[in-house]
Image 1 (cartoon, helix red, strand yellow):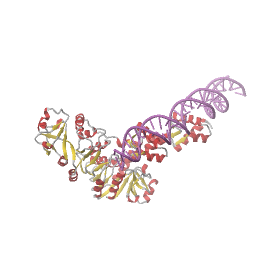
Image 2: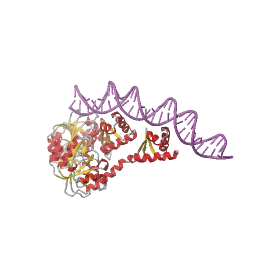
Image 3: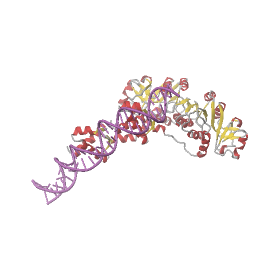
Image 4: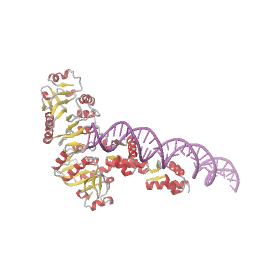
Length: 248
Length: 248
DNA sequence: TTATTTCGTGCAAAAAAGTGCAAAATCGCA
DNA sequence: TGCGATTTTGCACTTTTTTGCACGAAATAA
């Protein structure tokens, strides 16, 4: 079998089954694994597949359908950079959803070894992109607006977790009214997450500070850390610092 | 034998067998390999064949592959169109993951009122795009390769469901070996889905028919309906029709 | 952690390709 | 037909490509 022919075959196999093993291919084509490895390396070099330990993956499967709209994305990247400093190896991390959390997932250091528990479809996809992080998904009914799972079963499952830290992207925060939202079911889930975490971290862009919505998630006093794109010393954040919240 | 005559012979041979070896041609036409090499070089120069070390490949073979990305998606769209005809209002539908299932989710009729239960992150996102469909997510650990949830909890939850129909995008099907896959955890989940459904529908492009992988999901007899992009009367599908499977 | 698998690199043998050349065949043209 | 020019072909030789193997490094699994 010709080399080019062999590579075509491999390419077809990868695209058909999404993933191939070096050993299987070596077996099927009857050449040494070294040869297959070299083929995979070449195909990966030219961008046709994605190489992995032990085989290769289809490119089409792994390409990210990127978030459209870069609305406020820079700010959210800054927030994500700050937030990842709170994560340590071995942690169990409860995570909400939203674009800020997605940025957090993308900002994770390469070699991090941690477990992320979330009910957000988009956040889960971002977390699974990470090479070593484990991802646990909280199942239940999916809320169409927010693309997170909501409902009694989700809340029950969250209540069984003892997480080290909880990251919530929040919609509104105000010193008196606390954390608020306008979706009753989402609020229930966030409350459950707060109850199941040793530490609660709220992520928000400065625009949402000192705003509030209809339904209360939690009082300020239940919050441990607040992350914004602002300097921690910013006067806008003073009420929260005064309330004993660590602002970064 | 004239030079032109010889080159035409080579061209026929290439298009017939998709590949030729320099040594074979030299043998068949009784000229030195140098001459064959020069012929191949000329034919490749004028774009009639693809040269390779040791011989040459058919051009049609190679190019049809290059467009395979789009080509495959078209087939999957056809499959999705056929599969949606099986869905009725009010149904509870178990759904696996994969690109074919994603197409199914996009092909749902606007006014459909049904409940989709899935453990695939990408499929769930597609289903939530539908205006009226309800989406239930099966939670557990997320497998990085396939981006579906796997594990005992997922299987336990699936076992509590009594679905009307189950759509599985499958990796390999063969009359004797049945449905097979190469990821043990994914297989467990698919088996659970089959057990929990009144009807089992397998979706697959024709390339995967009569191929098999390492781990068995189910025997052919457990399958009710097979959906491919081919005409149901296609001879390739005969063994499955004969096995009592409804092929559409 | 330890054990196993897989990877990357260098190396050597074998196959194939490129190169220059000369003999043979073919062509062009009177 | 004759004769030089051109093309084609095979051969000897060198260079490149391909492939499998060995061995230490790295990654993964237990």
